[in-house]
Length: 90
Image (tube, rainbow, N blue to C red; front, side):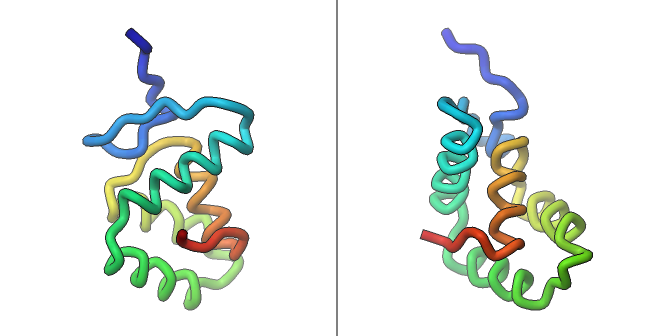
């Protein structure tokens, strides 16, 4: 049985152990996050990203993740890249 590492957790309900290089883990976390979020949540996040200033990205990411129940190091990195404009929803 694999041990689930807390840093690899997407949410309190869905646990994932992301594997591969750091970049692959972030990419996989983003794909899982996209599948986890509904269309309404994606639209809301895009609106918040549009309105977010560069100096408030860290705060916006933390609030978004807490609001949507997303947790973990790799999902956080992926969401940060989304707010920085480096990622789009698939």
